[in-house]
Length: 68
Image 1 (cartoon, helix red, strand yellow):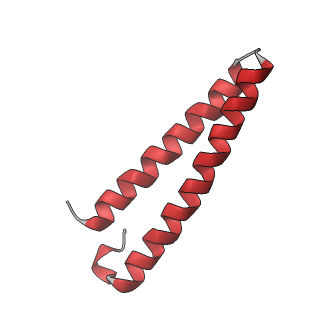
Image 2 (cartoon, rainbow, N blue to C red; image 1 turned 135 degrees about the vertical axis):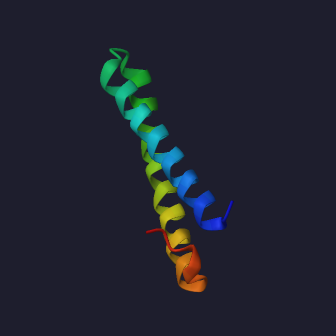
């Protein structure tokens, strides 16, 4: 498995986790839990941005890893 493929899988996993936390936030009535889920979702969005920046860097350094 190439670095590009692994990075894409990591990004997809983080996107999925963030979406799940957002769904939990919308579905819960517990305000503390809602706040926690929203914070986790935000943390995951921040991690996603970092991963996407890293993916761009990898693609610039090694064009063969660029996802089509």
